[in-house]
Image (tube, rainbow, N blue to C red; front, side, top):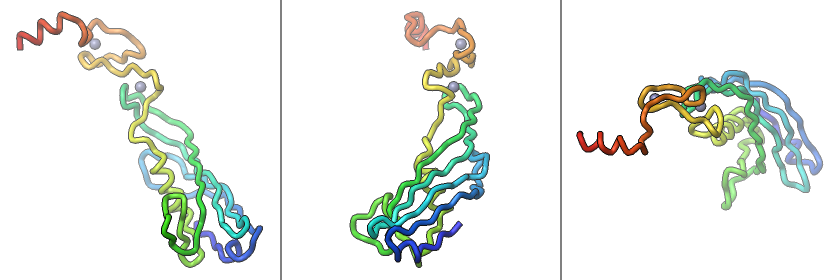
Length: 156
Ligand SMILES: [Zn+2]
Ligand SMILES: [Zn+2]
């Protein structure tokens, strides 16, 4: 969705609310992205305060268990009409007074997305020898710290 910002940039105290969905083609994002929030002009500076919510589908990096969860990414930016020197991700230059909110939300979603997921922080993962899910069971494989392994290693 594009948001027209002439009126917001031009008037102190002016604002616009939005609440809509758009689709992001990504196998990990399995629901439409729900964006809601507002842009507002506070003492001549235009801010964006919103959130983007979606359902994430991934697999645990340790045990391969499927993960499904609702993710909410905050979108907090200062919108500026012209590029300035001290730019960073917080400052968004709005071309022609039109904000491409879908693109901005997508950028923030990917910036916030971790490179790997765990089903839980304490996930024990799979045994590297027999593949047993160590969250559910224990196996009788020797652990790598078992001294018997050192003897085996010497044989190879
Ligand atoms: Zn796991
Ligand atoms: Zn095992």
